[in-house]
Image (cartoon, rainbow, N blue to C red; front, top):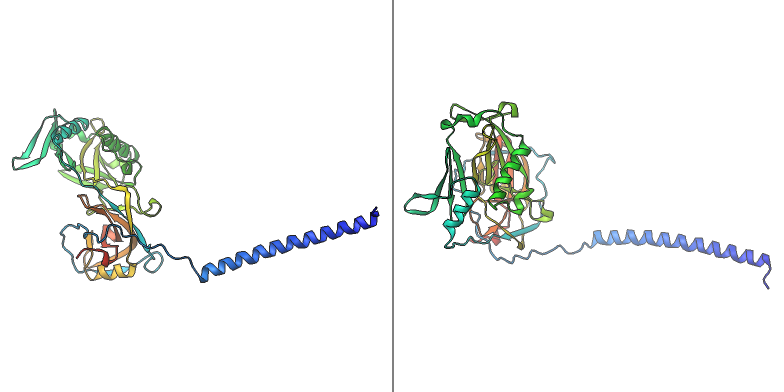
Length: 351
């Protein structure tokens, strides 16, 4: 039988060797982690390759606008042009379809928006555009029964009581606009919780003047932008008329704070049908802008010189049917200046 002394010696050895083993495990794990990090830095994993499943893309449908010669001055937060993503998704946009019930569907939509169901053609030789009226109020809905785009107008001079009082706060106004779309079954998923902007307006002497506070305003305009797509749904949209959205409404202060003016130019996209494409670097996009190869959406209150404050990726939401929802490099500057350069590298555009 082992003596107590032998047991004590054996126990101390077990403890000592156990401590050595623990130390070796800790050191080994530390060395392994460092080695792995160094290996990944020296031999980075292969970058994902663009899938380009749609082949060559059609050119973006930029409107025909003057493209003046401008001297650009960069004043960016980082002190230099940012590094943009190397690739991102392009989405398919399904074409709209005609059907024999188009006028009936438009009449139902007009009724859901608060207008009479009986419409009339705007012009006889333009068969797809109809006007619906609102009974006793001087309001009209003009709708394209094929594409579904519509506008709402109001004759304020005939009913100045619509201006009585202040309009609702921005959050309430956005909810009013979304409720209007929901009633007409037009509130899509990418407009439900999407970004929005607002503008306080004072209407007087037939002019819509921007004011700085709700207390000064008798109208409020809300712009509903499409939600983000692309990497982690973080890439937002821009329009041909920035800072105005393709879906916007003006809400009154009087007569129950209702929508009196608005535009709805929305075309759905299919988020399940996407393919990645390689993107230009920001310095290449800037060179193209300087060489007048971009699109100036809004010159703003600028003349010969424009100071650029932000450069970022966005999706171009054309407000008309386009086959694919594509990214652009946005150059945003002082005094509401917005310019875009197609972001996908040139070899993937049709000639």
